[in-house]
Image 1: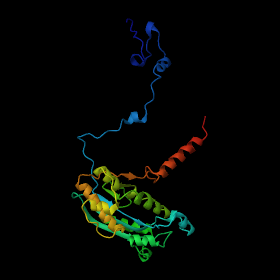
Image 2 (image 1 turned 180 degrees about the vertical axis):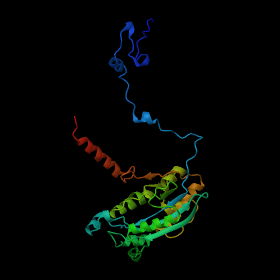
Image 3 (image 1 turned 90 degrees about the vertical axis):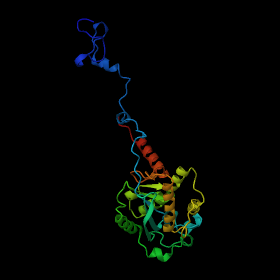
Image 4 (image 1 turned 180 degrees about the horizontal axis):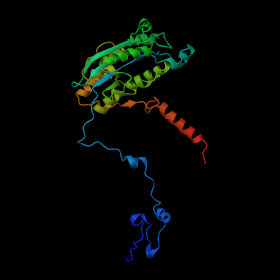
Length: 302
């Protein structure tokens, strides 16, 4: 091709317009339309695909401490209609009456109990215990009457944690709460604190459900309740079942045995979102549906 004219393309040398076949000059608008089938880059294009872990990556760091907790809370065994007739609405059931914790250090394999905490809690809206819960837990009316309300107990718990370099106000990557099931934190603690207008502290915004870890690690579901599961591992169940501290101490045996048999406590199994709603919960799904419906009702701006 003579005379310095290039074969037609998008953008000539030095940013000029390309020269078409036969010497016709392509305008910038026609050049751009030729590539109009290309889409703008998405956020994923910019960020890139999620990186998978490789064999030579450094392994995730295990928690140095696990806080095993098993709350006891108000309940009764009456039918729902009988509770309503007596004035005990279902919404006020589930107030914590025993707040225990067992601190397990994982620094020395496979783990060891280093300290424990226990306080009885005076319920806010249902201060009189039912006969059912007193028989089940052996917690007396006198014990809860002498206790503080939940916010003060939480403060005492934080003071105890700070002795060990931890705090309820810090989502410490080195420590994680562990419970036998999701209900203790996800339902009971979260909703009981809400009654006192206290947000869920950072320490409790994620936790380990040891039941799901049991299934993941040993490929079988735990059956028969906590006491039966502890005995199935070859341990004695020490103390009276349905005492919060006793249950927490025996649950710690399961956590330590999981570590001894190869499980690495490196991440939580459940948590809450920025609005304090548990991931995967019906509450969160309903809020998302309500939010989407509200957005769809907004008038479109033309």
